[in-house]
Amino acid sequence: MTAAIIVFVAILLIGAPVAVVMAVSGMAGSFMLGGERLLGIVADRMFSGVSGYILIAVPYFIFTAELMNQGGLTQKLITFNNALLGRIRGALSHTNVTVSLFFAGLTGAAITDTVAIGKIMIPEMKKQGYDAEYAAAITACSSIIGPIIPPSVVMVVYASMLRDISVIDLFAGGIVPGVLLAAVLLGTSIVLSWKRRYPRMAGSSLKAALIAFLSALPALFIPVIILGGILTGATTITEASGFATVYAIFIGFVVYRNLTWRKVWDSLVTTVRLSGVVFFLLATSAVLSWFVTRSGIARDAAEAITAFSDVALIQILLVCLLLLLIGTVMDVLPALVVVAPVIVPAMVNLGFDPLHFAIVMIVTLNVANATPPVGMTLMTAARIAEVPYERTIIASWPFYLSFLIVIVLLAQFPTLSTWIPSLLD
Image 1: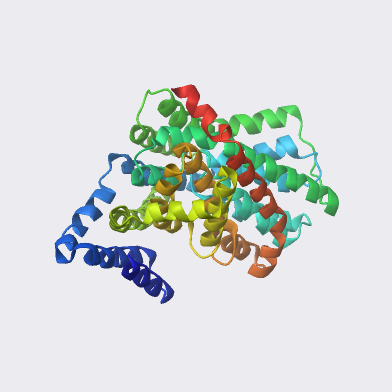
Image 2 (image 1 turned 135 degrees about the vertical axis):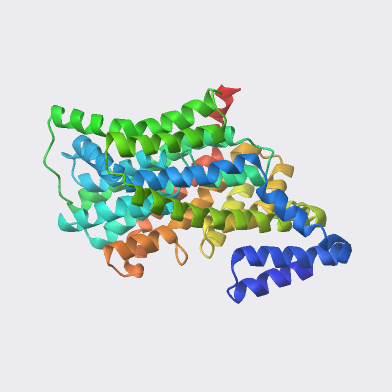
């Protein structure tokens, strides 16, 4: 076990890709456990890590998100939300959050939301007098709603790794936390907008709001297709993801007429690239997960947590703190595949509900998308806003407090994560 940890840390420090780090350290640990005999299992473990039928949904979700971005959906959602919130001070700031909430039901990826929404919202916010760093911060921080509200690539990956929880339960469990996160961010946006006297927009008539809604309505059926089919049992998750892709192509060509074959090709290229990263991570994480199971690291982790405190709330908050620290140096998916095989069995052994902890873990790790130094959505938004990354970090502090409030609430009240899934039983 010690050899595996040394190899893991050493290779990570020299800047090797996380997937390579997991593969090599898992092989080192397996060799220490059983010599060359156990090394023969590595290939089998890598294959099992990517052979799950449920993983077919991953490229479909990514492809659907790219098609919707290429098809011009973002502008229609922004127009609709502006029609609703235009009269409120700081309207564009609030619209940024609410568009992320709507967009979360379409993409399931934070970085996709940041690019799609940020390219339109950030320049417009700067034009209307918002601080550039604030525009970047609100865009980056609200984008993490994407992987929490279903569909979620992160949740599909989680379910494929730890198969004691279904994707359906994870999807259902993410709805309330995602809406709660949006509500807290919106509250922060309202307070800051009034304090800083950010501008209002011209109010829209009821007719204009209705037209904007009808324009966005075809695209808003995508979450209905995905969630409705899955939660009612009419389709499997892979079937729903495939139907969503076909529907996205249909409305892109026939309804909105903004989609071209060139844009479809660009979407396919992006899908292949991102899917390759996800599947490589899953293959190598399976090697590390197998070693963790055989070595007893999870048991040791549970004992270490118990040594700090036997109070459940303190235990889960300590783990959340650890996840936040890991998230400062690793992106969400790499952090998930590295940490989950160790932490999840330990927390289950301590008596935590697997679904409750899964949602808390996913929400906490997704905060990593907007926390320095490796905050991908924050970096991307700062680049779009053409503002120094450091200034964007400072502007994000009020939203970090919002994240902490949500994490504590989810840790304290398991019902927030388990209520909707319980209705499906």
